[in-house]
Image 1 (cartoon, rainbow, N blue to C red):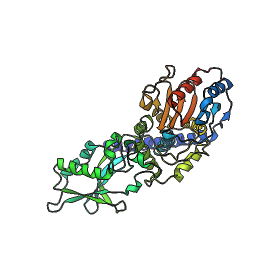
Image 2: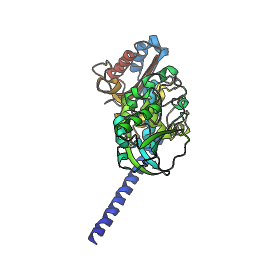
Image 3: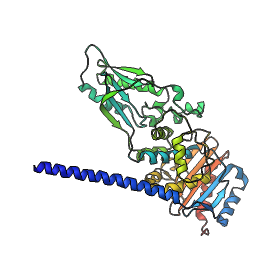
Image 4: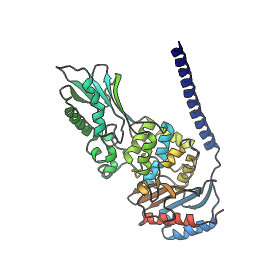
Length: 411
C-alpha cells in the first residue's frame, strides 16, 4: 500500500513538472512574440562623424560594398548602400539556422534507426545526421546478432534510394556540386561532416559501408540489403535501435561557427518537413514575415548560402540580428557564431588587436563575395557588411569595424 502511495505521488509530481515545463515553454514563446511584434522600429539616426569616416574609407569602392551599423536602441548610426540586395554567401545561414532553432528547439536530434517492418524485413530510417559515421553504423546493427532469422532465407534490410536530381538545390552550380563543400543533401550519409565520404553517390556509399559492417559482424549470412525507391511503402511495428545525433544547439555550431553547408541544409529540411529542395518555402516565408523586420528584397534559394541566387540587404540582416536578441533561444543562437581571432571560421582571420575576441559573427565567402554580420560585444552594436567583386575584402571589413570601434562620439 505504501509503495502504491509513493507511486501515485511520483506520478503526480511528474505530471506537475511536465505541465510546468510546457507552461514555461508557452510563456517563453508568447513573450517572444509580443516583444518582436512590439519592438520599436529602426530609424536612421546617423552618427555623422562615424558616417563620414566610413564614407571616406569606402569612397573608391562604394558601389561594391554595403555597410549597416545598428545600435541596440534601434538607431542606424551608419549606413552605406544598406538597402541594395547582395549575394550573402554563408550569411544566408544567419536566417536558416534561426528558423530551424525557433521551429525545432535546441534539444531536437536527428535520429538514425533500424526498424522491423510488418513483413519481418528491416528498414534503416535515416535523417541526414552529419556526424553519423562507420562506428555508428556498426552500433546500429550490433543488436541484430540477438534477433531470430530464417536459416534458409536472408532477412532483407531496406534502404530507400532517391533521385540524384533531388540531391542538391537546383540553383547550385555543377562545379560546386563536385566539391566537398557541395556534398549532396540526402538522408543517408556517412560522416558528411568529414566531407570526403559524401561526394560519390552517398546512398551507394551507405549501402557499401552497411555491407562491410554486416560482414565484419558475421551477419552477412543472415541479412541482405534491399535498395528500394523513395516511394516504397514502409509500415513498421517496432524500433530495434536508435542512434541520436548531437542536439540541435550543438549542430548549430557546425552551421554557424564552422559554416558546414550540409548540416545547414539538413536541419532546414527537418524544419519544413520537406526534402524536395523546392524554394522558396511558404512555412519559412511566413516565419520571416513574423519577425517584423524589412525583408522585402530578400530572396531565399537555399539554406546554406551556396546558391548565387540568394539575396539579402545589410539593412535587413542587422535588423534581423536585433530581433534574434528577443528570441527565447537567443543564447543558443548567438553562442553558435564564430569569435573573431578565437573560434570557428574566424579563428585565423588577421584582426586588429582591439577587436580580437570582441566580435561575435557569421562570416561568408564565395567567389567575389565576402560577408560578415554579427555583434560587437560590450558595445551593443549589430553590424552587417557585404562586399562583392573586390580584392582584399576581409582587410577592408576589419578596417571598417575598427573605425566603428574607435569612434566614440556617437551618443
